[in-house]
Image 1: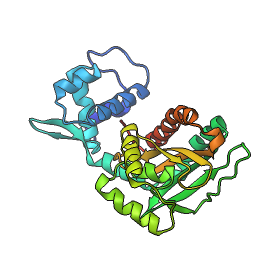
Image 2: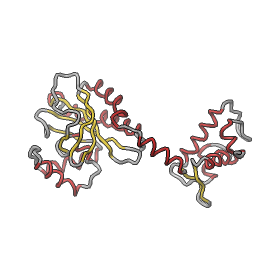
Image 3: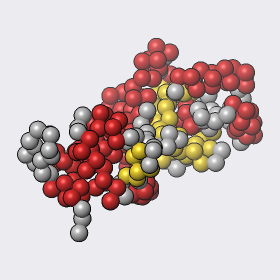
Image 4: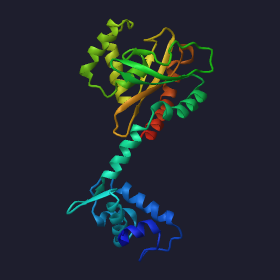
Amino acid sequence: MRNDASNALSSGSEFAGEPPRASGSQTLLRGLDVMEAVVDGPVSLAALAVRLGLTRSTTHRLATALIERRYLTFTPRLGYQPGPKLLELGFAAQRQTDIVQVARPHLESLALATEDTVHVGVRDGTRALYLDKIPGRRRVEISSRVGDRQPLTATGLGKALLLDDAPASWEALVADDQDGGARPIDYATWVERMHGYVAGGHAYDLEENEDLIRCVAAPVRDASGRIVGAISVSSAAQYMDDDRMARLTGEVRSTAHAISRDLGWSR
């Protein structure tokens, strides 16, 4: 039989010292608040009660019930922190997450707003693999196709995938793409631009991969903060002058952040 704390968590009954609450959903929300409050734990009982705005007795009851269900753990002299059940659920959710499925509605909104071609892709060895493409409404032919593997160092999407890489690795990647048929570049200029992209959290393709085609790209991250993909908006250079690319940058980054949050990422 479960102890009183577990019954308190599941029943939604009123707690001593707390204002009356009508529904069990309020107790459920309190339990979720407890788990969110210890995510950067460990947190002592006193500090946890202050964060939640609850009495220590109520906080202890909620936490004890969550410990019983393995959502929290308690270490003497340290406090409460996330338990193994949260890890199990997190890994299960991550395994079931498909970046294309998650990104699709965001990409459709971005394509509608910009009227340009939108892509999502991932890193595949030393190439960028395009997983989805939504054509734009302008009469612009973008040669990319779903399943294409494009140079990492020449495409905006590819460069966005490289933003967390050590600069020491860039030269070898550029050399590999050049050997694979990518267009010749001035390496010093490329490196200077990449440092700017790293600082800004986005990347551009300035007709480096295809004549008269420019794009704005940004990375997508998972719950660990790791770059797991990237999105881009591409169009003809006549629709992508420097001013418009600058204006699009915030929109593309916001969309990438929205997809990342759906994958579990948090700032």
